[in-house]
View 1: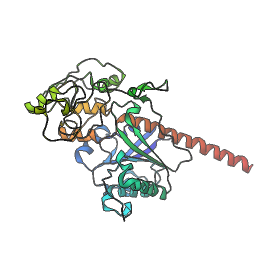
View 2: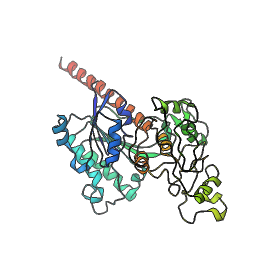
View 3: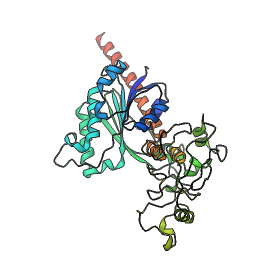
View 4: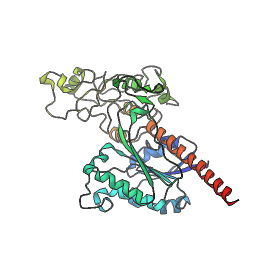
Length: 386
């Protein structure tokens, strides 16, 4: 099978395309990312990919023709997840709504480049926007340019990611085979025993980060706390630098440190004496994570206690950038670029690499089955013409 050529749109730091980048049957030809530090991080990890750091509206078929010597139909696969802001389609088609600009650009590039398959990733909330009308319109638009479309809500924890993170995955194909979504490899033990013997229990926060030192607020450590304690940690530390990168905690004020110290495992401000409780915040702010459960969905604010739940279960501080990277299954040798805020944005906005891996495997099988089915069809035609 010749290499499957890919364009990575809204590439971020490379989470969605990670599995494809680490499989020799695929080749990422080009990537587009508008944020300079994000694009720089992508380039550091993908030195052989042509990275276009510019507005998506300025990227398209002409770039791959002029710069890469390719034509339309030379690209086999486009992957990407355009941010879908909470726009409404009331009285307006999505393709005409200026608030849907990024989706429009994804759609435009599909029409121009005509890949055989596309992978579209987005937040779970896309399903319920405008009572589901928006999602239905997106599906219809993809079908209007000749793709057979299938979609599924996937939870990254079901595939060995130590984090509850649900994402809607849409696959569009023009190939002569049916796309099959990956089967879960893990189950939630809190729901009881798995009915399937081949499933493993969810990975926990402890599984992911227990070999990293329990530094305090304002501290940094470049030494591992222990040898790898499980297969996940071994994988994260494969080819890792001798010194841990990005494992430093913000210097929080003493009052906040005291609050974090008083929180129990998985605790919220409601578990604190009334005089210690913050006077503002939402239900999931200033909350500790659980040591023996998967993390909740991490965001770009993974080091900000006043944002969503992100306080370390055993140390009085929020997660470090390196701990956030572990929860997104980026190995310890993966490079991020810029300030703490830049790096946390790169991590928090990413697709977990393990989810990318299983999607890659399903897409690879889809291409392989197409070859088999096409060969059978040609053989049948040959038999009929004899």
